[in-house]
Every structure is written in C-alpha cells, then in structure tokens.
Length: 240
Image (cartoon, rainbow, N blue to C red; front, side):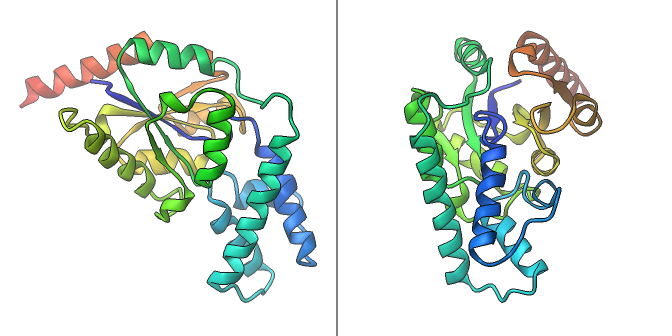
C-alpha cells in the first residue's frame, strides 16, 4: 500500500532553482571564477550545494578542503536566506496545498528528502505554514551521500519508522516526488516509485525517467496511484 510520500524540496515545493543558479554564480565570481552556460543544470540540479560547489571548483583546478567548502556553502546559504527574506511571498508551487490536504485526508505520511540545508527548509516551511505537515526532514546537514545516491531516501524511511513504530514502512510503500534526473535516480535506487514533476525539465523528459509524469502537482491523481499500489500489493500477496 501507499503509506508515505517523500517530497524533494528545491524545484518541487519551492520554485527557487533560478535563485540557486544565481547564487552559485555569485559565489564563483567572488572566488574569481565563472559559471559556464548550462553548467549549473549539468552539475548542480538535484544535488546538494556542497557536491555542486566541490565539483565546480575541482573542474577549475582549485584545491578543495573541508573548511573551504564549509565556508562557501555557509556563505551561499546566508545569501539564499537574505534573498527569501526580501520577498513578500515565497514562490511555492501551485497545487501543493491541495495535494497535502488530500494526502493528510488519506492518512499518508509526508517527509522531505533534500540536499538543501535544514535552516533553508525550515525557513520556507515556517513562512508558508507547512512545518506541521512534514515531521520528517532529511537535509544536507545529515551528510548522507547526495542524490543520485539513495541514502537520503533510505534514511527517511528509517526515520518514519522511528516516528511511528507500528508503520512498518518499506521503500516499496513510498512514492517520491522529484523534478531532476539525479533525484529520480536516487529514489529508484532506494526501491521507490517516482513522480516526475515537469518544473525543471519538460514533461516528455520526466516521462522517460520517472514512473509517472505530471506538469503540475495538482495533476497527480492520488486515487489512481493508490489503486495501482494496492493492486501491486495484492498481486505480491497472491504470489507468496
């Protein structure tokens, strides 16, 4: 059965990928470096800031130690939070509130799995009154391997089970919502099915990589997804 839906954050909950690209470019300029066209999408989309910055610096022959990387990531996070503080209304994707309402009505657990720092996620959730809906958050502060590795999704399953010991949650009971190829790969490697929402890439590309593709969050047909999970579960039970 479908017991939990695990949301990516950047590009799924908040429309902030252009801001992240702008800030990564700013960080590089401050380090006397330049971001090449399309390089952000190739290197950074779906990955944590630390992994993104480390690869960009390595490509440019910079020696990257832990302290240097920490300082750059912290600086970028400060810029991000300053930019959000200046916005009267945060760019939350349409359909999110309605989807959360349906999921809570269906008693489906919610979690966030993201490479973003916890302070950034908390800031957005608090300003949009969404904190109460996401008791479990796996963030960049957890220092698990970044997407496309499955570690973040597997940690979310573990934490959901700790949060509700009677849940007996398995990755196959979960659905991930992602907007990048790295995120889709991470969830699939964790053993989950994935909805690809066409926020960062076109619909037809999401179709090729994810189990389901939608243009917008409000296009997700929850009843249909639940039926497919139930039919798969019933078929598995009969086989055993």
